[in-house]
Image 1 (cartoon, rainbow, N blue to C red):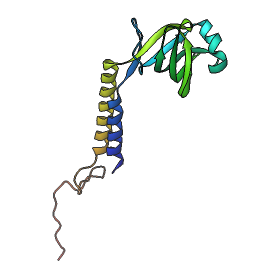
Image 2: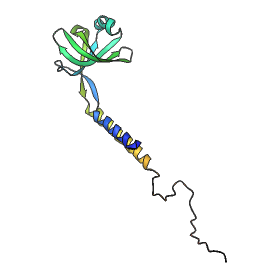
Image 3: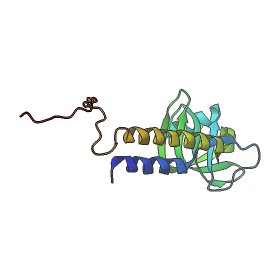
Length: 158
């Protein structure tokens, strides 16, 4: 398999994933198993700072359990106050509801996915056309000096 078809396959595979955004829930707590984001308040940063780090802005992960007093989250990412993030591998963390200032839910973004798809298709088209330029017929002289254009005939000398 040449590199161009591999690139096209990899690009199209990435486009099928789509884009997701974290959006405020604005209502009831999302269903169990949903990817959520929890913005922590100062009390939450102070309480969880020893276990998770002192500059936590948001905890992101899969909602495992929710009751009236706390969330149980399989943490995948911790976003820091001054930028940056820490990747986690699904460790379960109990977060009291009093430590949370905002709750977000990961939702599919059709607009971002469409934009990514358009950009991906454009990139594949550009790469494909650049790969095809100069692939004329085997006897093609593209890129070489032109031959004799006077249509002369050579006659052997007597």
